[in-house]
Length: 364
Image (cartoon, rainbow, N blue to C red; front, side, top):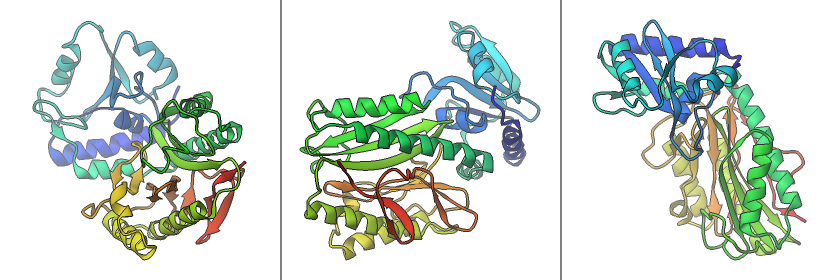
């Protein structure tokens, strides 16, 4: 049973205030991200790749329901849901039952939704922003997810062999995450041949060779821990080491700007300038640079026009990259404007950059 009833009550109160302000009769949430958010970490996911799940949430001025079918209801009640919600259970074969219940519960009135269909309206910006700023209990859960994900990464890279295929390394990464109760939402791997070729290297059936990159987007309680690490079997060549150094320097510019009130477009522009100063003017165009994270792997990807501003208790994950080099961790902007690295593992080699410990290439 989910214990975070106070957190859910606070979120329901904000949603009901939103109903008053918008004149809507209901808020309907069905995305995996919004379901996890409103239920304080419960999961409506069965198919990992789906954006919506096997249950949804309807909130009105007086009630809050989790809507699901008779296949899923008992498990959700026993293992996932806080006590703030009533269960509305419908036959799995009755395709109209959920729609009919929503219409009756809202008097066929205006409905706001994260995935609006037919006459439903999108969620207001105020509610979307509210979701991106975490409560203390959410940060507490996020710390757990980040710690488990980073330990899993270190464990797998220490076990890796040059003869492993990219598939095997990715599979070992997924196993390490599942073992810790995390969804392996993304496990990218690039070995020696493919690493210089592709920024987003989905794994293939070939040996990793003398070096590899692995990327995790690990999901727990609906929250994403995003991190990237490298391994080298033997001493890394000076030229490659220099590229990793440049990535750390570029990243430090973005991290230094992560203060409440800073616009994401300002961070993007600072990254573009930093690349240029390091002699890689086109790098800003060769891969997205990251942005805010949380209940999505990226809530907002920073670009020149994203004027959304950073706030205390928002999470960020930047991923500057050059050919064959990249860096990424998940941070929360603390009350004092400092950054807390949720995916730091003291057992992984690191170096201090601008007062922060940042990962090196693991040489084995």
